[in-house]
Length: 206
Image (tube, rainbow, N blue to C red):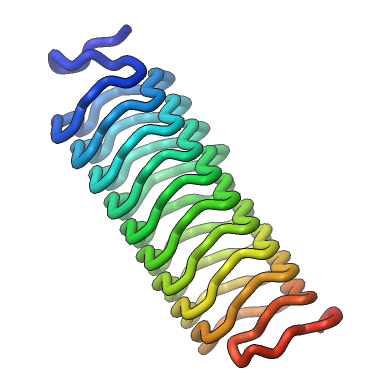
């Protein structure tokens, strides 16, 4: 067990509202921990285990979460703006509804089945990300970079994707109904069986 600023860092710990900004938390085990509204600005969480943790409204601005385990974690309304790196991070099944991910670097992360409804993703980097079956309904995705990402059966309905890049992405069966595709880069994008903003379903390759 690690102690940081008088706080025990262990599975199930209640660290709600604590100030852990800039803390070195590499490889710690915070499985099922409660970190509601916790200040983790600039914290180093690389390789940490936060599976099932509750980070509702937590502040992770400019944090590092490479190879961290955040599967099924609750990050609803969390502030991850400017997240520095998340390569290899497991966010499978996580709840990011309404989270602020503007300018966040999530390249190389795993977001399979994640709930990202109404999240703020302006200018976020999501290259080479696995987002199969993720729900991004109503998300603000202006200028987001999804190059080379796996987007099978993801839900982008009603999302604002103005200026986004889906270059070389694999979006088989994805749902883009009523999404804003203004100036979207679809070069080399696989859209087989995908639902376009108009409701038209593509049967074959472009």
